[in-house]
Length: 120
Image (cartoon, rainbow, N blue to C red; front, side):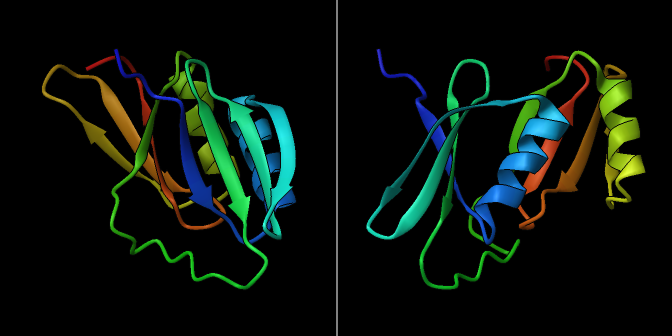
């Protein structure tokens, strides 16, 4: 059976992005390495990995990219929602028909993240 291994995101500042994901979600760094001049960090996201890649040349990592977002189920939704607010991040809350809430916001590089209050 095929299974998810990792999600890769280009970032402007690897150290800042690693710190954001460690601080916000509590993800841990599995490995840091270089490849063809790029600096790369792999973070354990529980069931897979998030690969953060800082390329050697400046890269436009505009939030207007072809993919939509990365969603994370968080058992402490209210705590994470307060953290989004304390960081002053712009957010969008969606309430599903079953009453569960979703929170959309952007990471430091403009990638859209979704917090899920409960499974869909």
